[in-house]
Image (cartoon, rainbow, N blue to C red; front, side, top):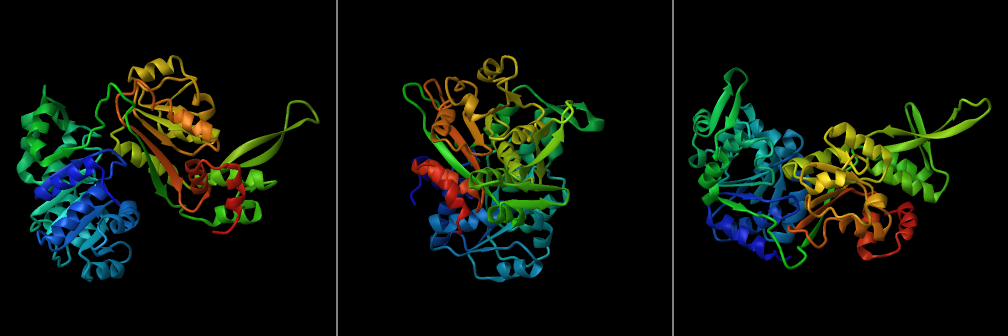
Length: 446
């Protein structure tokens, strides 16, 4: 594996700084950058042992998967799970131990031998008055090398940067949040802790932390189409039993519902729904006309895993203007439930408002947004909640952003549930194979 030029520059920046932060969007390769710098620091004897703090999903899935690609000679252990499992990782000879932030209070009670720490998703440390943060300070007290990674540095307001900077280096913005607030904010309501940034506070704060900060920005382009980055973001089904039963038997039963697929063509659609945590059940109901009946599709939810992942993606990208691509009506309904600010193409002047930068989240279906729309002026991020089966629609909907007039790199995130039809559809789209073949593949064993 070879880093891109900007990633190499970022890795060099980390290696050259004992206290540093990397601010970069989802999919920019923060883990690859950091593992490369960690490998070099370990090899040169700058560091003896690293502790990595990360969200649980990232700790268990991302770091173990990325380590062989970027730091093959480095040993890594994951300290997540039962106390005995965590202790085994901690007491191992691994040069890198990865654990989740929820274990900080437990870590504070252990005898540690780390001389360096990496904070993956630094925003988890935005509250310097919390119990977890106080535990952290005792854990990292003797660790001189501290690196922080995030894509959502100021997602919830400028106040959040203090805790993040304090974890990395207290000399950046000081030791006291009260003094920080007094310097850069005006108190609007002390009783409720309501502070308003002073004029040019953002610029002043960023100037203070700039020497210790490497920022990966998309950059602007005038004479050529900017790069397109397609990033897979994966999650697991908490309970695979319903999915596996539908795949095997073409039917699945819930306490108060039953979903049935009539044939292989129908079951693949059901499986794609279930990869997002729900499935439609068909119900026959009477109409107002005597003797007349109609069939309705009622959604049955059994897991929020994919939409929880979407929450994380939007949060890490600082709620930047983003297009959300859905496949099913129930997905759109869930998006509306979770995000009241969501706009659809059916809303008045939605395209004009999007291109003016006034729409935070725009939901589109590939069939209605696959051709003819110019959306490149309102944002540069897109998330596929589910993929279309059509290669043409897939390429065309991405082309709404990645087209002439787009001034930034385009980031397309594909949410996929592991070991489901999501993987087969994505592989087929990437290989430009007939996606119809995927339907049969999904029904076969792994």
